[in-house]
Length: 238
Image (cartoon, rainbow, N blue to C red; front, side, top):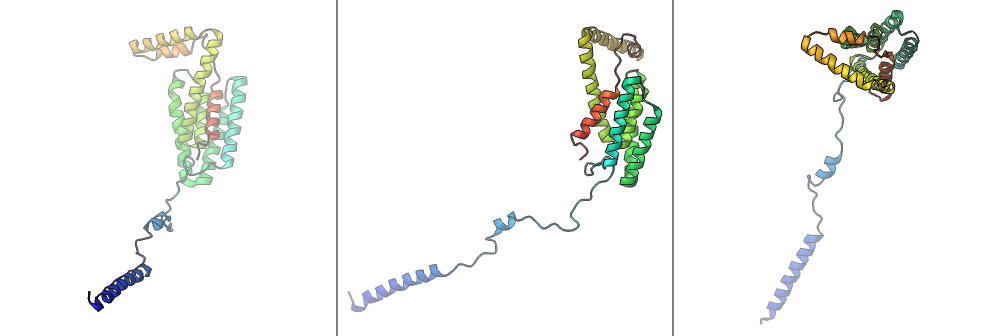
């Protein structure tokens, strides 16, 4: 072994170890993409023009119904129910005033779009109830009452309340017939009535059934009013 070989070899190893130490001690440069995860977690800044415009109108999901409209609606429904239960009629003056108040309040709060929504709600409720009214299932007062509800709430909420009220009215009628022991009789009469309508292709059997003296009379303002109030209670105006 030559005299300088070990020293050279030892120095070489020392230099390599020192180089490795210096290399490991040198701080690494941070990559510009090293924080991509933390950057991706941060929510993007919202620009001033990125917010979608809020819809307006009595029937808008993004608009809460003002309190005067709700107060007018609840007062109107309460009066209709009380008067209908006592006298089996709803005054035209009461329904007419509610329609005018609905159109005026929606126009005041929502402008032209509110007026359009009010008139659309009135028309939708009257059109849906025209068939049952023509068959004698509901009275003219019930049609005008729901027309006023549509003028106050707009078409969407009025139709939802109308649907809930009609289902509730059917349940009330079923319970009333069951308590009187006439449920089976009424079901058989209903099947016969539908069959007669299909055979004759006429609506006269339906009209005769509604005009019978034995038919169970129900003030339909009660279930219709409860259905409308239930829609408001469930927060469907938001």
